[in-house]
Amino acid sequence: MTDRAAAAPHVPTLMTVHAHPDDETIGTGGTMAKALAEGKRVVLVTCTRGEMGEIVVPDLDTPENHRRLGEMRAVELERAMAHLGVTEWENLGYHDSDMMGRPGNLDPRSFWQADLDEAARRLVWFIRRYQPDVVTTYNDFGGYGHPDHIRTHDVAVRAFARAGDAAWYPEQLSPEHGGTGPAAEDGGLAPWAPAKLYEQAIPESTRNAMRERLEALGKPSFWAPPEDATPEQLAEFEAYMKKMLVPDASITTWIDISGDPLERKWAAIQEHVTQIAADSSFMLFGLDGWREAWAREAYILRESRVETERPESDLFAGLA
Ligand SMILES: [Zn+2]
Image (cartoon, rainbow, N blue to C red; front, side):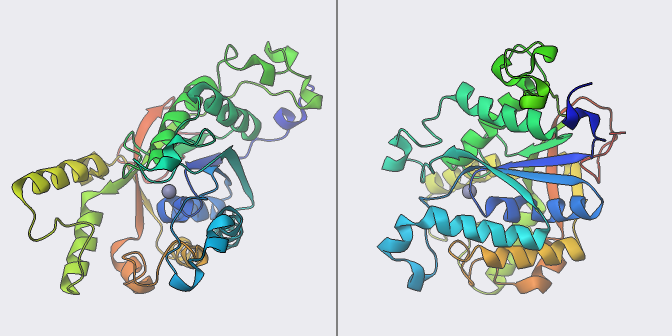
């Protein structure tokens, strides 16, 4: 075998695919830290640089900082990864699309405007290069409806299906793998089919715990309808929540992140300075709040090429 990468022993690998810097920590930070502690390899792929995000700290919310927000968030990401212990991360190279319905959606550089086959080609290249066993993404609503999160799902699902198929993107593959690209020693790759694809999930119990705690403090909650909502607004709110939340009984995989992974996640969140305000519902209850109510990350096993028993407590369950 001439492929040096393939000749090296394979380390079980998790690839988390995210829309913006900070999503990795909020959604999968504990899972990533835990996998590393267990000797797995973890690779983060972020699809955009988050240039169009809000700046939630008033002192930092200046035109100059908005102009260089991509760079600022890259630094925040690097610092957050140091807490999680992650040393490998990549960017798919798209421009942040901004919130749904805003002009940023029309920017030809934006992820929302991206050609899906081209975007999948980029992610397939990372999958073939890093050879993950497990890939995570969002549901088809992008978790909460943000265009970049929806696209992240669209692209991850396609790349998961295509990376192992030599008919897709043969220019990436070495001739010995049926491709038209360079030889393996010159960077040509082999097809690689990850075994499992997960979608992050927000369990209903997580929403309920957050909502109860916010209501106890008398704080308006993103998780509850406005008190004076009309029946139409109420129906709209319920429909939105239905797309976002997953009944606990439908969760296939619960990852217990209590202890060190949770502490690392908490430290990493603080590094996303421009994105997460001290009084946001993520921060308000402190580390103790997280220990009590949010010490698990939840997933839906969407595709699997191996047999596993559900519910799982490990994304690598069923893998040799
Ligand atoms: Zn995001």
